[in-house]
Image 1: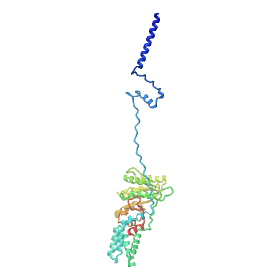
Image 2: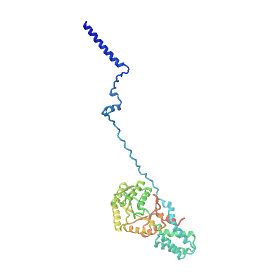
Image 3: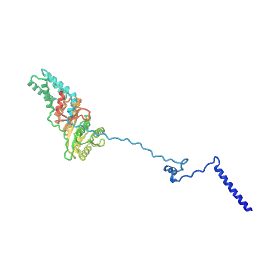
Length: 392
């Protein structure tokens, strides 16, 4: 009996305990058990990375992985656009108006003097003075005046057309249209032609070199430029700009380096690349004739180890007049000049330097600079030049 009662008591106690737990679970305000977490395999990738970070999900000790910094994009420098220059043929005809603006005063003055009814000694003196002032030179001036005096006596009465024809004939004879003004820039088999450009700094030597390269490329030739004026960093930079504009390779050396070395490298580059012409810009210092001779002589000798120097162009500034003549004589004694490039011919009324420099040096003016534009270098045409002096 006592055992039976004990079992009943135990059952009652278990029932009471169970009832109390249910009460606590479902009483008002009671919290439900937290739901079971899903298995890690079902979590999204970003949640897996967060849980894998040190310190758990969030809170103290948690770390945040930052994306790597984004480098700013470097600016893209576009290469200069390569220009296609026009051909050199007919350039002087197109630029004749510029020449006429500076030279026609001389022509008008001479025509007016020669058209007078009476040509006495005083008038002939004025004609002579006008020619000398235009830098024609003393000897050519006397030759022109003597020929004109003879022709005027034969003609007697003169019409304006006859006077113009007389003067044109004499000026053209002094400019000498029969001189060979061909620019020798033809390849020699596997070797390019080489043009050496010489002259005093300030005459437009480096600019003329760049314009000549542009002109030759316009005529369908390929060109390598040699920046052998190593004593002026600006000269090499300037030549580089000209080369970049027309797609010509420029060979440079260290500042104050050996000019002959640059000339040699440029010639070697021209041979390697099978170009048509190598143009070498040289230093223009007139410190002493001996130093100039040594430097230019060495440059020429070094080039000739690789190729033939076909042209030695002397660049002269037409506005310097007789000073330019003295410079020309010094260079003529140093190197064998084959032609003259006369710059700024549109900026002076002293175009007679064409006559005097040819007479003094015995070499022709082959190129004329008639403006500051890139295509204002033209093959010199004697007839266009004389007609510009006389006007229409």
